Image (cartoon, one colour):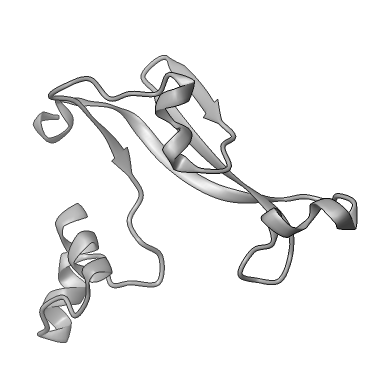
Length: 106
Protein backbone atom coordinates (compact mmCIF):
# COMPACT_ATOMS: atom_id res chain seq x y z
CA UNK A 1 0.00 0.00 0.00
CA UNK A 2 1.67 3.22 -1.10
CA UNK A 3 -0.09 5.31 1.56
CA UNK A 4 1.66 3.44 4.37
CA UNK A 5 5.07 3.06 2.72
CA UNK A 6 6.96 4.97 5.42
CA UNK A 7 4.73 3.92 8.32
CA UNK A 8 6.71 1.92 10.88
CA UNK A 9 3.93 1.20 13.36
CA UNK A 10 0.91 2.49 15.26
CA UNK A 11 0.47 4.42 18.50
CA UNK A 12 -2.51 4.68 20.79
CA UNK A 13 -3.08 5.42 24.42
CA UNK A 14 -5.53 4.73 27.19
CA UNK A 15 -6.02 5.15 30.91
CA UNK A 16 -5.75 2.09 33.17
CA UNK A 17 -7.78 2.27 36.38
CA UNK A 18 -5.60 2.04 39.49
CA UNK A 19 -6.05 1.81 43.26
CA UNK A 20 -3.61 3.29 45.79
CA UNK A 21 -3.45 4.72 49.27
CA UNK A 22 -5.12 8.13 49.69
CA UNK A 23 -1.88 10.03 50.42
CA UNK A 24 -0.49 9.10 46.94
CA UNK A 25 -3.61 9.70 44.83
CA UNK A 26 -3.32 13.38 43.85
CA UNK A 27 -1.23 13.03 40.66
CA UNK A 28 -3.42 10.18 39.37
CA UNK A 29 -6.84 11.84 39.45
CA UNK A 30 -8.53 11.88 36.05
CA UNK A 31 -11.27 14.02 34.52
CA UNK A 32 -13.92 11.42 35.36
CA UNK A 33 -13.23 11.63 39.08
CA UNK A 34 -11.35 8.32 39.34
CA UNK A 35 -7.71 7.28 39.50
CA UNK A 36 -5.81 6.09 36.45
CA UNK A 37 -2.38 5.73 34.86
CA UNK A 38 -1.94 7.00 31.31
CA UNK A 39 -0.47 4.24 29.10
CA UNK A 40 0.91 4.63 25.60
CA UNK A 41 1.29 1.59 23.39
CA UNK A 42 3.58 1.74 20.38
CA UNK A 43 3.31 -1.25 18.07
CA UNK A 44 6.10 -1.54 15.55
CA UNK A 45 6.24 -3.99 12.68
CA UNK A 46 7.40 -7.20 14.35
CA UNK A 47 7.69 -5.64 17.83
CA UNK A 48 5.49 -4.27 20.63
CA UNK A 49 6.80 -1.54 22.91
CA UNK A 50 4.72 -0.71 25.97
CA UNK A 51 5.49 2.70 27.35
CA UNK A 52 3.78 3.25 30.70
CA UNK A 53 4.59 6.89 31.17
CA UNK A 54 3.13 9.61 33.33
CA UNK A 55 4.07 12.21 30.74
CA UNK A 56 4.58 11.87 26.99
CA UNK A 57 7.55 14.25 27.28
CA UNK A 58 9.37 11.32 28.86
CA UNK A 59 9.28 9.34 25.60
CA UNK A 60 12.73 10.32 24.40
CA UNK A 61 14.23 9.60 27.82
CA UNK A 62 12.99 6.03 27.44
CA UNK A 63 14.52 5.49 24.01
CA UNK A 64 11.44 6.14 21.87
CA UNK A 65 12.13 7.95 18.62
CA UNK A 66 10.86 8.17 15.07
CA UNK A 67 13.54 7.90 12.35
CA UNK A 68 13.68 10.73 9.80
CA UNK A 69 11.23 10.18 6.95
CA UNK A 70 9.18 7.60 8.88
CA UNK A 71 5.99 7.93 10.93
CA UNK A 72 3.63 6.12 13.29
CA UNK A 73 -0.06 5.81 12.51
CA UNK A 74 -2.25 7.34 15.22
CA UNK A 75 -5.95 6.84 15.86
CA UNK A 76 -8.53 9.47 14.86
CA UNK A 77 -10.35 11.52 17.49
CA UNK A 78 -13.41 9.88 19.01
CA UNK A 79 -16.76 11.68 18.97
CA UNK A 80 -15.77 13.83 15.99
CA UNK A 81 -16.88 13.40 12.39
CA UNK A 82 -14.46 11.13 10.57
CA UNK A 83 -15.52 9.76 7.21
CA UNK A 84 -15.48 11.78 4.01
CA UNK A 85 -19.04 10.63 3.27
CA UNK A 86 -20.25 12.10 6.57
CA UNK A 87 -18.65 15.42 5.65
CA UNK A 88 -20.28 15.36 2.21
CA UNK A 89 -23.77 14.37 3.45
CA UNK A 90 -23.68 17.14 6.03
CA UNK A 91 -22.54 19.56 3.29
CA UNK A 92 -20.13 21.05 5.80
CA UNK A 93 -16.46 21.72 6.14
CA UNK A 94 -14.66 20.70 9.33
CA UNK A 95 -15.80 22.94 12.18
CA UNK A 96 -12.84 22.41 14.52
CA UNK A 97 -9.31 21.05 14.68
CA UNK A 98 -10.43 17.52 15.63
CA UNK A 99 -12.77 17.24 12.66
CA UNK A 100 -10.06 18.59 10.35
CA UNK A 101 -7.58 16.03 11.67
CA UNK A 102 -10.11 13.21 11.22
CA UNK A 103 -10.94 14.37 7.69
CA UNK A 104 -7.26 14.36 6.73
CA UNK A 105 -6.77 11.08 8.57
CA UNK A 106 -9.48 9.45 6.46
